[in-house]
Amino acid sequence: MIRFLLKGLLRDRSRSFFPLLIVMGGVSCTVVLYSYLTGVENEMVMAHASYNCGHVKIMSKAYAEEYDQIPNDLALMNVDTLLTILKTNFPKMIWTSRIKFGGMLDIPDGQGETLIQSPVFGVAADLFSPQSPEQSILNLQDVLVQGRLPKQKGEIVISETLAQKLNVKPGETATFISTTMYGSLTATNFIISGTLHFGMAFMDHSTVIADLGDMQSVLDMENSAGEILGFSSSLIYQDGWPDQIASQFNERYSSEDEFAPVMLTLCDQEGNGEILDIAHFVSRIIILIFLIIMSIVLWNAGLMGSLRRYGEMGVRLAIGENKGHLYRSLLAESLVIGFVGSILGTVLGILFSYYLQVKGIDISSMTKNASVLIVDVLRAQVTPRSYIVGFVPGFVATFLGTTISGIGIYKRDTSQLFQELEA
Image (tube, rainbow, N blue to C red; front, side, top):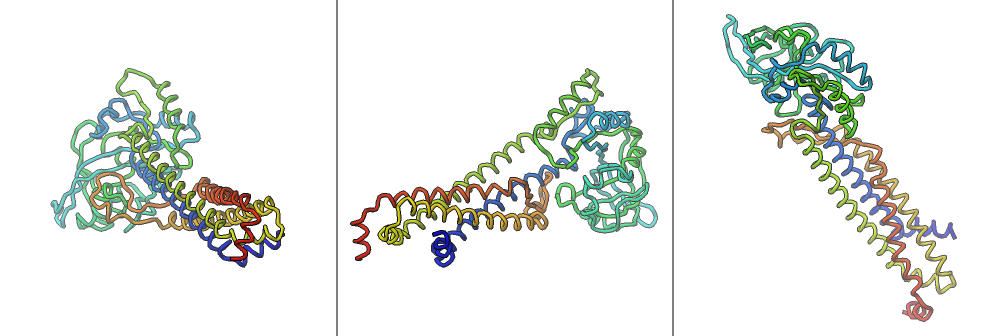
């Protein structure tokens, strides 16, 4: 009988091929949708975390209150000691100091006179230390357009858009003009070693990346930093653990001193918590609606498949096959189709999701005037849940559809069967 059922599934497309395609399509679409929404969410979070918020951020209390103004006069001091303590108490975290700064970038002509100027926003990070994590966090090598990354003191990289605006190329000199930590004016010459394209309109507009040591010297901030960022070792943000770390840190350094350090999580900064909650809610609703629709489609496919085979069932009952055996055989077929279709659909969805993870979808045409950190290329992300999010509903819905439709077998009687055969 098993051999008979297998031959029937292989030879009759209405029983196997088309139901299999329906299951494959539904499952693969579910996997791709889930992976893509997960990837988009993580890309957005990582963009904010890498350049701005970290998974956790340490600032002085006074700096945190006026954060939008980048008040380097309220920066943390003795950061080397604080970093040592952090690495000892939280060894599984990645810790790095940053300075954010603003100013003017002046491009001189051949006589040293100002040719063109532009306001700039800058980030100073440890670019030279062999053990520094900044290269992987900021992903500078992958976004390099021209030239090279800074290799020695006195070199900076700027955004490609800014370079085009100022009409400068790698190797040329630029003068950075700003104010120091103590309010005095400073002007320092830098060599532009390369240009970058971040894929975020806000940063591509006027960003300068400099070495932390250089900017500490230029801004009179020796052993000081505006903020210390902390990241998980995997660089992937997950809810829960940042709150525990921030609670432990803030309890230890609780003080009335306005220059005492305070730790904020990513969700505590700039309304990110509300944004993430909305993103989680929307993505879950979208996936839930899609799963319900897919389950209904597969359920109906099982129902219709069984209804179309009522004639076959009548013949099998007429030649003496037991109703229970026939019902169980239908369930066995649905299990085989659901299992194989869900496996193939999951594999197909994972493969396409990996493609989107590597290539992504370019939305730069829609983010040209964006004033927030929005990545230009949205990528999927394959997670362990991607392997089961489509498989389970695909397998279960097909089985349930056949289970319900197959109950009709027990309502067939002999007189009805002979009438159908005569017709």
